[in-house]
Image: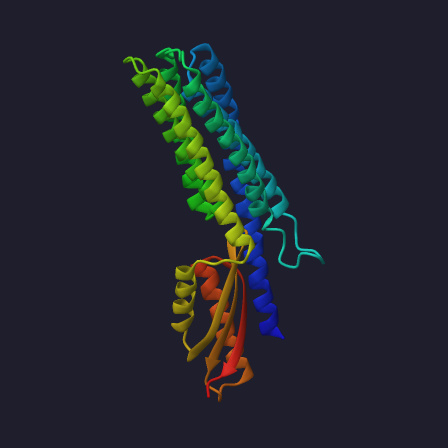
Length: 303
């Protein structure tokens, strides 16, 4: 009875730490939302004033990023709800569902940017954007680089995959702004269509980001799991003293953590208590090395 109590408390402490990490992750989401609100308005207004299609497209890109960041924030909030009778493992997948919904919104905006950009090519009479709009794009790129560095560092500290993905989105936005600046500068040398080409490129980047988020989200929601990570789990379990064989290892992603089911083989002469101790060591080691939340170990005698 004592061993069962100790194992249960270990899992509970892990869950408590997960909730603490999620609350810390909210700071990064709020930083992204604040930055995108400021920069999207700055870019859209400047784009209209200085006649830059690339800067306008970049501004609309940041509008979709606001939606994505809000979706991540909502997902993080819902993920903090404790387990109940309908959600025995908690609500950690809420952030994955929010990201999936955000990917659809991003795709719609990306396609609209592409349609507008391609349409402007056939309209002709493209006005050369003011060189000041290039300066606006560069300033925004520097700010987004700062947001990326902040979120990337925080994501590593709390080991939060959702915030890591948000940080990568911050970096792509900085690169998009750099691309917009290049297109605007190129337009100053008698190539006004280059600004439109930059806008189309931004549209493709938005669609590509939406596809990546959609692919990762659906992979997680359908219980997909990286084969290399599964191999690493198997290797860690195999090196634990007392484990003489591994019949099966399964895992699935739940929020930012993994749920693992493993069937091991042990010496058939071991007592029930000794087999339980091996199971506890597996749980502790996987939680320590692989950031797992729940580990279910089934012990079989090695024949």
